[in-house]
Length: 314
Image 1 (cartoon, one colour):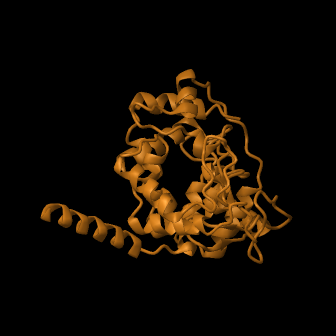
Image 2 (tube, helix red, strand yellow):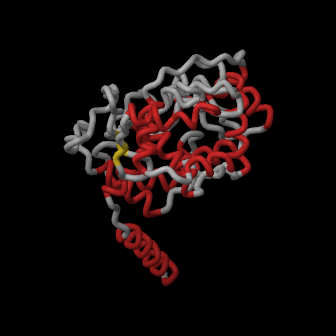
């Protein structure tokens, strides 16, 4: 009887401790940017396979995230997404989604552009950064002038002619600005880019991002791969590899509101290098370690096939 009572006290104590951890909805909104690809920016999923989270009970969301992280609930997509979340992260994300009406209708803050808004002359759409809360806004004309030093590697219009360097044309402005910021801070390491960004101001980064974001990207020229296509669309449940389509989209265009980059039009050489650096941890500026958790499970053969397919995307 004493053992039973003691066990009950422990259980009650655990519940109380869990309840004591309050979530910050504002912080959760920022952290939830990576959830938008599947669950929608306002918690209403556009994909039938994924649940709506808007208005869901916060305790339930926390429990599911905890179970995904612990492995007591298994899912090849959610497991890597939850792997690096702390208890506070889970509480914050849960607070954000639980506070959204079940309709998903959220009044936009003054100055925010509607999702999917097209760039206008001289500017790009105003979007929330990931994971920061800053607003990126750049001047295309100023960016064109500043981008002259980028042309040797990335092409005058952002379409690189050198396979080892990425094409920037059509990439989302917030993603480009984040990479520039990460190169300058050292969160992303590259000896060439470190020197290039050293003197850039925040305004410079936004202007460059704006310029490249509105350029027309060229179609991929890769040969394609049936095995790579299967891995891209379905992942590999046996290895716990998440399908690439979840974040990068059917046509590799990415999901800019969630901070997931476009990979269509990139060379196989560049894509292979990025997956290899995520796998060995030498690149670690991915949100919540999403790419590292996936890449570490990829074999050399997997990387060869999936990059062959991705480089063929139009």
